[in-house]
Image 1: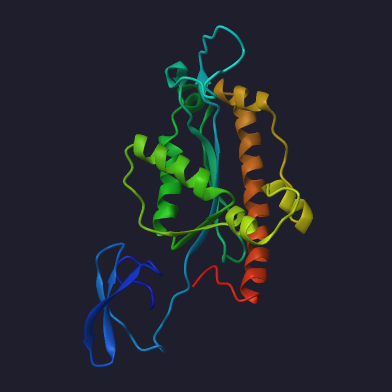
Image 2: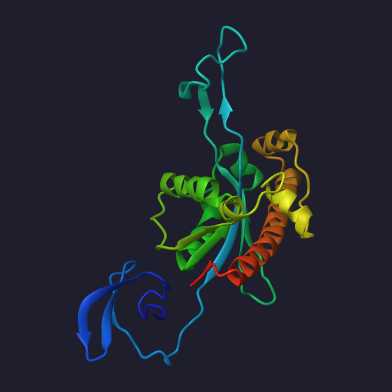
Length: 246
């Protein structure tokens, strides 16, 4: 099937039982649009594939304990004084030539107030357009963390998209010493990330503008390395008979 005429999404089709001659009606699960399947030689748009990554703040807690041992294995949620927020994000359309990075970050004023609504609107708009969203450990972390902040900031849920997690693909097929993005970047000769220290996260919570810019540069390095890793994984997997994107 080609892209939906109404919302532009690809890969969200559900076949119906209704036919007109040799052509079948299909239903888009994203926008509820019904579309008659066109002949195979019709115009087919490539899927919109977005790679994205976020950097989150430290969660601040005021812990009162009898000793240093946490007997239950978890701290009590009542100890949380300030929940996490998203410091910055970077995203890029994988097939763009030349590659263009889109990003957003808090200001120092916003960091002190843990307010990320302004810069997250740009990320929401990109995710709303995407057919596929790619990231490293994104299913367990980036997607859920982002969805949490969207909910708390009053954003609606973005349009449906399919997820590709390079960490999951690596776990299924490869066995290096580590599955970390930095380590894969080193093995495959991709761009390396800058280093961040725990004190940098504390400085951002205090509103340090210079450290916020350092974090955004670090985040953009994740994207450049991650896209190169994704392309190499995709070439290897699809040449072996697997399919990452239909």
